Image (cartoon, rainbow, N blue to C red; front, side, top):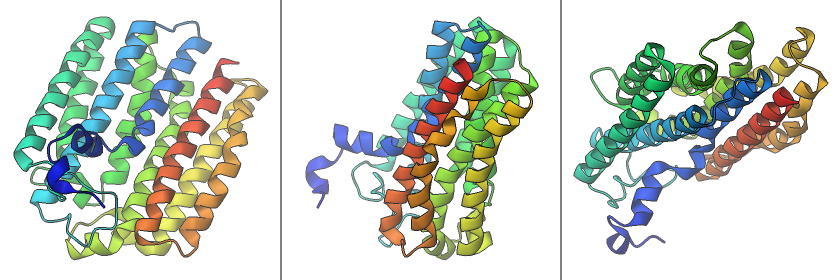
Length: 299
């Protein structure tokens, strides 16, 4: 049992609001994008490191903004079954969270300035859209997460853009192979969100937060989860058949057993807080898939 009075404003509270279990979603696209650069002898250490820092900062920024806006809009209530939220639990005040979001954004902008120097104006355009989307995910007059656009946002920005952007800041070019290789990361990162929204269908519906899971219902959300996983596992075969890579590109298949218990949990009796295990398990499985995928690309 958390003693909120003793942990208010502590390092624990700040770590909590970053949602550490979701951070593999930021590491995966950088690993794949850098692997693609390595495979083409275009790897550059400093831009790759800056891309990783930027991805982590944007992920943390989205998490903190979601914590803040869901609290002030009354979406996070005592009925919530997900992991503890810093604002809703009183561990951080809204003012503290606003300051935290500002600091994260300033760090992201600083990191972005180096990437603009290293890779040019296209990075500036990506950075502007990424930050605007970060703020619009849970906040503003038309929050994406509350209008069934969260899945699309995650698929594009934490999948396609993150992988292609990581590759671009090193290679200064893009091709269709890079785009195709970004799809598994986009799919599995979105699958993490699907579990989160599947768990929260009832509380989100009561709070008038319309996620894609709320629209699709439990059966539809489960189907989306399956389709995202299947799409991730189809891409290595596509790349192999295109002769873009050798047989090592099928290495991610070794991660398939990790997804079987997760599928059983989604289709079984798991509900409420039990799905937190499925959420963290999906994040871990997605990272392992991505690392195997990265190794397969390099080999």
